[in-house]
Amino acid sequence: MEFVVKNGTAEKQKTACLIIGVHKKTLPASATAIDSSTEGYLSGVLKRGDLDFTPGHSLMLLHTHHAPFERLLLLAMGDSDKPLTEAEFKKLTGNLASQLKAVKSKEASVAITDIAVEGKSLQWITRQLVEAIEYAFYQFTQFKNDTGKDALSANSLKKVVLLADRKTADEVKAGLAQGQAIGNGRNIARTLGNLPGNICHPTYLADEAKALAKNHTRLTTRILNEKQMADLGMGSLLSVSAGSEQEACLICMEFKNGKRGAKPLVLLGKGITFDTGGISLKPGAAMDEMKFDMCGAASVFGVMNAILDLDLPLNVIGMVAAAENMPSGKASRPGDIVTSMSGKTIEILNTDAEGRLVLCDALTYAERYKPEAVVDIATLTGACIVALGHHTTGLLSNNEPLADDLLNASKEAMDNAWQLPMGEEYTQQLDSNFADLANIGGPSAGTITAACFLARFAEAYPWAHLDIAGTAWKSGKEKGATGRPVPMLVQFLLNRINN
Ligand code: BES
Ligand code: MN
Ligand code: ZN
Image (cartoon, rainbow, N blue to C red; front, side, top):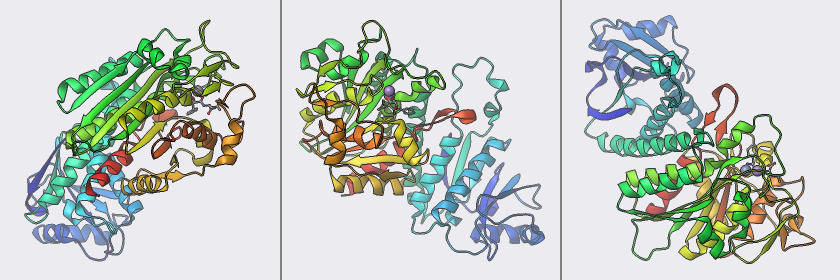
């Protein structure tokens, strides 16, 4: 989608579709101006009660008298003229995006400065609105021959104009830049997630990283192959790819744009490009969705793209532990004992608990960067869906300030997360009779014991873990990757600059 910021007043816009907010009590500035230039047409319509003022509702008016615009979309902003709550605003942007998808015009103009949200800046409002539009207009059609039949591809809108004035233009422009970077980064993550396992395998991800580095001088890519990982002693990571024809790799995208010598932030994504469960084979139902088991990795790619777009003055390492989990004569068996790069031995009691096996060696490798903090992002446990459903990402950490920073970022980005506890009593569930630790901790507190496993490999730095098993993709009719938690992570990085 093309966005532009334009100085101008709503009532004078020669646009195919003008979009303004209205509340019942008093008309905002744009609406008042339109009402007088159309000889009271707008207030007449509203008086008749044709618009439900509850946020999330809207009314499209065609053929407005004496108006330079062809259509007028009224967005409900409530009965009173109080600023919207965040939840109301989310409904408004959702409705706006779906109305824009339905509209049969190439261009639309939004009177963004009339929208007020409790405690939020115009920059934030702009950014969220742009993100919502980018999200709504995303399509994944690369494997469809007949895209014309797809209702989604009937979108005709190409350009959105954000109306501002001299005073507000800078804020709107700043919000637009962030919204586009985050929206695009999120959509890149969605596409990687949506790609099937036969195409998006570990080497495909490595090639993506190489391509990104080729286009950006501030990014360099280092890719470890299986031989190199074996030399480093990554017996845990390699045990996951052992059953696969696809070679595993560890991808490190190094973005150096901060102060020289400043410790980097490391983002580490779980990149299981397909998770069959291995010898502990998963049941068949919905197994196709295990192509999404690299959505943590996808989110790292999304974030790297966004920070390149925004040219953030930070040092950030995007790491991806990529492997395919397959059963075969060469696959790991339950009961196998492997030695991780840290030297700790692991008894693999369930080959389906593979995410932690690839991440633990990557966490050890991350020590080389002397990181300020490491955040891993992983579709790690079905238990997280039981605990938090599909709305909220699980957050676990060995460092409270880091956890707080991520929670604050999640709130600001409207990309929810919730912290779960950790502790010695949970770690004990991982005790093994035969090795230093087992890779599963029994049926209770599955998300927490998985995090406790990882924590044993993340003792050298502040670390947080995001379990996105419930939030990374949608099932059913809307099946597809969501691109979460790209917004939270980019916000987290943005906040690091200001501090
Ligand atoms: N990738 C799965 C977790 C998952 C399952 C995410 C379903 C989203 C939906 C992970 O590799 C896995 O299989 N975890 C096991 C762990 C168990 C064996 C301790 C799980 O959650 O069942
Ligand atoms: Mn698994
Ligand atoms: Zn998995």
